[in-house]
Length: 367
Image (cartoon, rainbow, N blue to C red; front, side, top):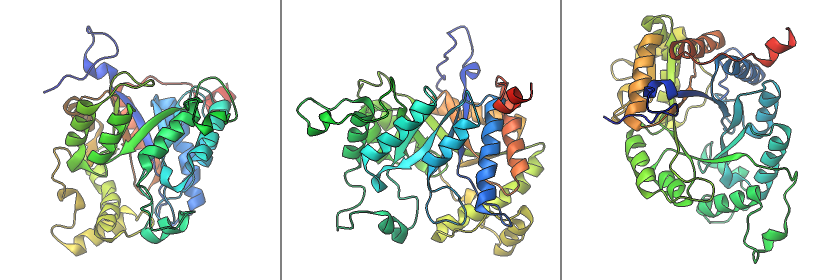
């Protein structure tokens, strides 16, 4: 088994270096509105900062009743304003929908407002169904929408860093606001293809294990084996994003997970896009479907896409997963119905790992 590299020096164990971050898809609970879901995101981000999480990434999805945020660049602005230390970013911007220059402008604007705190993770998935993806396209030719994705990423990186070759016509463009530094650019993916592109471009790589758990081990191996050092990054750098549901007892975590299982089942079988059901409704639905209804039993990867249990159980599992994948940062996604239970899940994990508490902006305001 591999040893996780320690950032604290060889005298410290690997677990002391393990960082936890948050991926938020802004889920809409049944009986609530998308506006409620966005307010929940802001509340959870404040909590994540005070609990000591490393970064807070916001996802992009389009035309879904389940998930409320189609524009992470807008929600990042609000979340960063409500916090003061945690890194905030996209998880990710779906680049084929946009021009690289426009994305560079948006994120250089965020960097100017919140210097040293902004991450820009980009992906090529549509974040929607086929019709919605077509409607999002400006150029509706027969060309496959994402076929020039690597070229888009290279152009975005050059705009962010003012780094086009002198002979390139875009070298004359000065992206505003023109401030020192720029956001950190990450590749987001869930396949061997994204791993190969991240390696070829010498980018840090965030793998969505909660989407493609069967591919995680092979994708990370491909990324590390093929990695080419770049001007931005000398060595491979990886985050693994997974689902986790933590509660005071294993039984309670299992009950809460019923909502997640119904959603994942619907997505995998036909792209169903409804709000997050209550655990009670979800349990009734799964029971009516009978044996084999649990989509988490369908996965064949070494590690499941979602970990479920008490804080002690999840700490052991997360540490073992980090060792197996040789990473020092895990990004946690929790999609359940009750927002307070979701907050509690992140609180329990932070406590079990002994994350360093930060004084939040809200606490500062009342001190």
